[in-house]
Structures are given as structure tokens and as C-alpha cells.
Image (cartoon, rainbow, N blue to C red; front, side, top):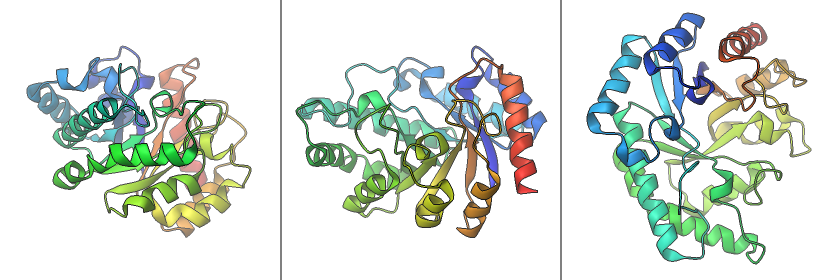
Length: 270
């Protein structure tokens, strides 16, 4: 397991400063929210992508991928009944995949709760069909780029579409494609009503990426969730991918959150 952190925590910090700081703490990876780069991913030029990747490399940091893929976009929606909206969403996801590849990334995390929300008139089955249509258009791009798309279950307070790991797993099985993978997030898993270590035992072998946080929206070790059994379960499941710190409450400050989160996770592993 290797540790990364999400860049939106460092509001208004230059990319070089973020990379240098997180490396100084002991992180090896950086996960990027596209809206921190530009209002639309197509605005990030090839030269800018090359520069971002080189700055990370120069600071011994790997850009591991992208998350918050559709956040702060307009006119995009995974489960829209409008075929043109779904096609536009697929085209945008394709550009995100290309950007991820250009940055040296390995994966994209598909969360974006507002851009997948079902309308009151839509059933879960309809939503799955529409989302599957959107995703089917990007699978060849994933294969060409060598990038994985990780489906992220989110709690019912955030969205009404794909709320559990089982639902995400079933959605992935509809496509049976090696580049479509499962994502775990502690805050989201805490809404399932099942001990987190049991969920890891059930789905850990299928999981490609992992977000470490707490239901209180802070970092690992900054709330009530005990990560000792979580890391033990991940080891038992032979999880060997990234553990990425993703928080939503920035009030303690990025330095404190980044430092304390990593120190706590290392203590749990030790």
C-alpha cells in the first residue's frame, strides 16, 4: 500500500508547492480534482499537462489520477434520459481519460453525486441502463490509455444512485471489462450498516482504489473510525494499491490534515 492525498485540500497552493510539501511528509502520490486545473478539462493544454507531470516527478511525487470527474461542470449527467447529454458526458470522460494518461495517472474515480442523481421518475433499473450506455462509449478509450475507471459508491445523503459496494460491483459486472473497477471510500462505506472490515473482506479483492477519511468529513484518525482493523482487512485482502486521503472539511488547515492523516495511517500499519 502506498499513500497519496487529494490536491483540492490545498486551496490556491501552486502545484509545485503542493508536490514539495506532501513529499516532505512522506506521501508518494497526488490525486487531482480536474476543477483545480481549469473550468473544463479541455482547457488544460498538452504543454500544461506535461509541465504538471514534470513538476510532480521533480518532487518525487506521482500523479496517480483524477477524481471529482464531473464536479462543477455544466450540462453533463451520467444518467440523463437525454441521449445528447449522455453523449456529451461520454466525450468529456474521454478527455479526462486522455488527460489522466498525459499526467502519468493510473485511474479515475467516478463519484460526482450531482451528475448521476436519478430524477423522481427514474427507477434504479433505468438509471443503470442509462449509466451503462454512457460508460460503454468510454471503455475503448480506457483500454487505449491504460487507465482504470473506478466506480465509487456514495451514501444516500449525497446521491440516490449506486449507494453500496454491492450495487457498484453489480454495475461493473454489466460490462465485464478489465478497466472498469471498484472504489472504496470510508465515509461512504460507513453508511452501509455493515462493519467496514466485513465489506473489505467481501469486496477487497475487486477493489482498485481506496479513499481514507472519516464520516465527520475529516482525515483518517481525526474522527471515530478506527483504521487498525481496516488496514488489517486490506492486508488480508492482499490490497496493494493506493490509499488516498480525501477530506471535505478543510477547517483544520491543509498542513495539519495532511500531516496528522499520514502519521495516523502509518501508526496503524505499524
